[in-house]
Image (cartoon, rainbow over all chains, first blue to last red; front, top):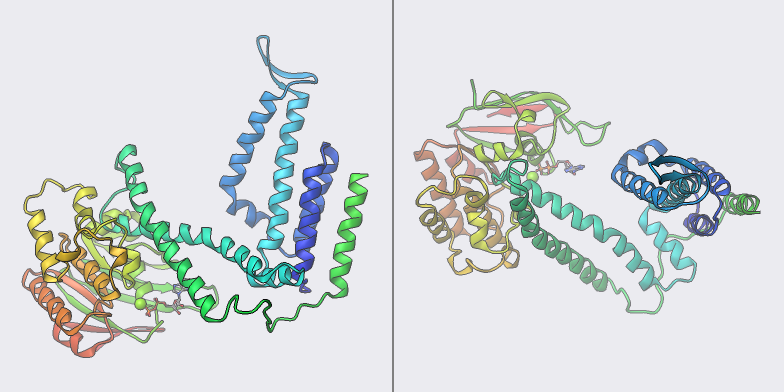
Length: 238
Length: 219
Ligand SMILES: Nc1ncnc2c1ncn2[C@@H]1O[C@H](COP(=O)(O)OP(=O)(O)O)[C@@H](O)[C@H]1O
Ligand SMILES: [Mg+2]
């Protein structure tokens, strides 16, 4: 597998997600989804694995689509209770397009997320983004998993201290969760503060620009991939 | 039937390289075990498996005759007290006192008498009384370690696992820990200590195990 330049990934994802937001009709959206999936394969992202990992998210989108389909009326009636039109062709269409649009955005985001985060930062810097902001993006991406990690560690500690989370009543459980959420956030903040301290110790923001070992170079494959994506997008939208 | 039975346990984080293979250990309820091994040989990982935090792929671990995978984490926690290697992972309450009181408040046996005295006693032993209303996260490394020890010692469990308990303790506090271990011995309670301090270990354990990639050796 050839290694693509991080800038290629960023540009492709930018193109695809803006197209996903602009396209209104269902048919082009579906072809855009197909294009995204092909690109994911090209960047060697396991499709089935990511579906499983994001199970809860899909569930949420499914509910969203269902609500959308029920509350959009117009077109022919498909299902009705009495005189109330539950599902219409137009509603179904908007439901499907929501799911499709979300899938496109998530899968295209995976193209960035599957690259090493530092590489993306170098890509952003090479695209003339100030390096402070580029590193801030990196830290923001890392911060949420940090809270999650601290929280799940606390949950283990809570259980080992003898609290049975399956048995205690819901109300007590909620109070327990809020009880340990605060220290988890504090711990995550502590760690974030240490990261920023050690970054400053290495001269972060001491000079307006920053050099690094990693030299990015666009290869022919990168240009080809970008060009192919742009052409496909044109064909789909027109 | 032994208290803990570890039966030909093999574990690896990554598929290719096995952390350890074919571990088999029998531990009695009133036994005092020491576990040693170089950094990164998997001592903490073995303990996490013994508590059911991690799941073994090959081999099995039995606690009082029951497979550890069939017991909930809280049940294990009521039987076995565990002092984490990293006290930051263990302390989650807003104040020191609540941390000490947590197992009684949320563990079910709150109506037991003499709890406050017990907590008082261990806070005094580890010299933490002055911090009773401050946050555990604001303590120094050694104080966190002392709080982690105190909160586990104050609980009523059958067996204790201490993962490098002496890290960060000064001489005085190490003496206090030794006193607590003596008390546990007198009460007939068992424990397992992971440590790098040979002198500390030899005087407090009956059996010393060395963990290596091919299994455990007793010496
Ligand atoms: N969650 C994890 N994922 C992958 N590797 C891990 C994880 N936790 C520990 N390891 C690795 O397993 C090895 C053993 O770790 P550990 O059991 O903590 O060693 P120690 O004997 O010093 O307590 C180390 O090489 C460590 O890098
Ligand atoms: Mg360890």
